[in-house]
Length: 267
Image (tube, rainbow, N blue to C red):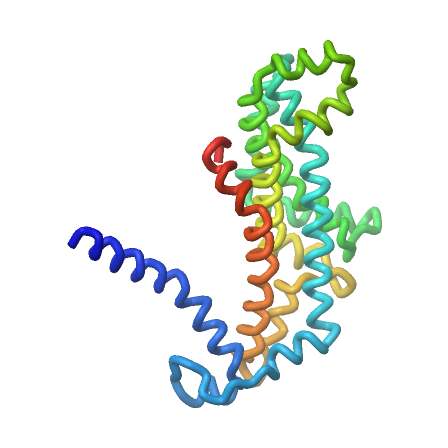
């Protein structure tokens, strides 16, 4: 009886989790007129016109391209800076290290709206407005501190004797760090990359404020479904389904590292 209750509870929980995604899929396969005309648990007249509009209209599908570009750039930049910084915090003690580590985390605690205007004015002045690198660099303000915090936890779990042994064997630091140390914390790198990707992918304020047309992300383009005639529910739902796919693929590729990473890291 206890097993049955647990099974029923898990099924109810799973249904609650999947229901919003299913309902969005249901709406994406129906026309807007059909959605507004009647309530239906499943699409009776399936149509792919919403997906075809997104995949054939450059103003729509370029939003996904723009988002992927600056998200990839941000993940690479964040990891490039966070890996050596986390190593320094985990291996060395220097004046103000604790204060600096705390200061990094305070950047992650601040709301994005606080930094939106300074970034906008700065990028307007130096000519970076409406570029992919502008959004990628802005997201580093939040992702680098988070990446340093996560990676430092993993690196502190690696014995210092490994570093000393490698140096005695004649390894220079760059070679040791890339060929020996990073593979030892690959689970942490996977978890960090996952969090950097997900924050940059779903963030809207910076992405919308710092772009105009050339680098406009899909999250900002989705607001185009609102017009004088109302909200295009089917088109918005189709865009939402396509937006979920990249995140699901990232989770699939790093799933093994995530399981190990959550068990060993600070997250």
